[in-house]
Length: 529
Ligand code: HEM
Image 1 (spheres, rainbow, N blue to C red):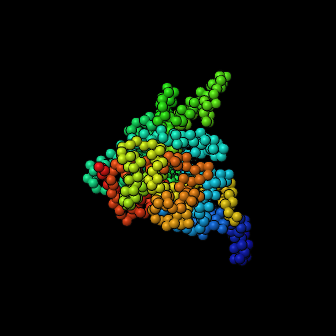
Image 2: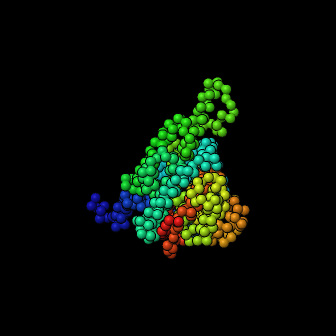
Image 3: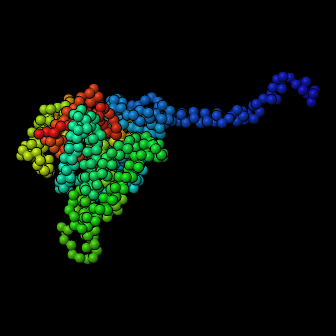
């Protein structure tokens, strides 16, 4: 051994102790520890994430690479209108990738319409937490024929005849809140302007609850739901942690949603009892319950073999829904209307205060159609004859569309153009703002001009009117929403004076699900004699 040892050259020794004895794989294994495994996997994941993004992006506009994993997540936590606008201007189709979600944004009218009208390729995409708040069995998550059939059963609740029945409840709510605003301005703040955005949100919630469930919900409960509703909006951020952790936004949002569902279910039980006893329709819930009762009566009559008259058959036979099913559906109405209506209401008051000539014209019209009696009750005929007031509402919705973008998801590869296919599973988002600010359809688009809806050419471009979407999911409440806004601002113009404190933020847009003036609209209300 000793001879061998002394005889062996240093090189021979070196080769004897070489780490390459087991070959390259052995060397790698020898050198590997926990950290290198983690680092290698991380590098592979980053590489895959980048590759996947670039592959999905294909020929459309988007950042050359993405911030590893999170993408522009931090921007989406605090979305800025200007950033959105920049994105829309970057190309007809653009993209980003946030975490694992690849998002395609369509900015032209035709591209947006194509998405809205391609139900075989896309379906509405709600953020994951919406399933937990609205419950997974909610009708809004239905797709295709099931969705169409369910929706048909709700259409009757929004006909002209039905909308007329809800007007007294709306009128009563407006009058109550006008008094409340006077109190806020004159008594609580001595005529000093204060932000009114949250008060408008409360009014919109109260008027929705009154329209949807009438007097079945006590005023104190309406107030609680209105106060807490912003927790639901705040929980519905585009990107959320998949599990609801205690004391987070989603936790508080879920708690607020549970209260709404419980209260609407109680209202359903009360309406069923009242309508079965022959009560008259005062709200959407009553209308729906009556339709269920009439359907059931008809079915039983047919089953018993009794003779039936074709006029007895309801326009559509629907099944009897449970209190909780009814509650889930009513919640979708509140969910769909609350933020959008609050946005429109805030801009309406601000725009009218800043344009006294338009406000005067609206006052004159409202007094005229009421034959000089400012307390004359609302009716559908009256609302339909408010040509200028309705043009003001339309122009507000065009100038400041509450819903900027409507997220959809690609159910399968979606060939949106000849050269680009949206990958399956991507979020694909039609936008409304660019079509509504298209100078070809609306000359001078950044100017507020209600007259364009009366003597101008705005009505000649129905394809640009994307305020309420289009296609199978277009807004179910669009007629109600516009008449409701016209009724409110018309009544306010006769009963109230209001002054707006203009700040440099008043015309700037804040995004909170929908859009609001950045200074939350500083107003003072006073009584109009
Ligand atoms: C100014 C107020 C409103 C605006 C701007 C608005 C806008 C929209 C938009 C953009 C959509 C998506 C349409 C699509 O995907 O094609 C929508 C859907 C919907 N809206 Fe509205 N909305 C408003 C008020 C209301 C009100 C008051 C109600 C209920 C009474 C309502 C009920 C719904 C429902 C149920 C859907 C989903 C329809 C479906 O998936 O079939 N909305 N709305």
